Image (spheres, one colour):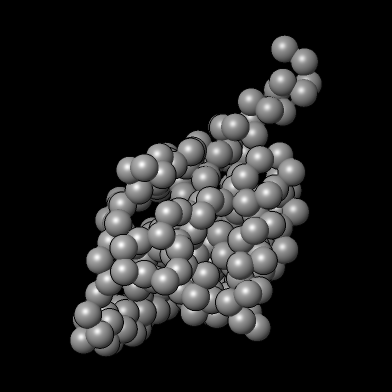
Length: 234
């Protein structure tokens, strides 16, 4: 097998990610942009991000062993995650390595992150959801970003799904988990206005709970490191 065939095989492997691998990568991208002061992530922080209820569809519940196994696959098989230990810290941390494989713009990375975390969405939904990661001027800028990803030189990275019944806009989906059978794509009914209000309120509450849990994890880690440091002088 020549070098080009090896590169093609590795590229295809990176576009056949499991649902868990997509969730882990999405969380790493999200936290790198939204909370850079806590990035790269420890295992506990990544676990909390993967299991959080806000900004996730579907909501998932993993244990630390599942996340570790997924990280190992992404590190060695996919070569999309890196592990290192920061100076002064005894806890390994993790970061994504997508930009070593693809030269994504900030707009493209934000859009992919939201598709990884929330699944298929319209350009308008992506503009709203990705606002915490990148400030798009309008939906046309999102459409241009999606079109560039759909026309990627080595092969499409996103696809435009058929129009859902009763909806004006078509949804987009990523192709990092392989090709999508468009004829079998899920058609979701439009939610009632009251449901959207309740959902928004629940997401705000869940986001606060997740932030508190993340801060508690960081504090516990700092206390553990401080205790170990103090023991050196006792």
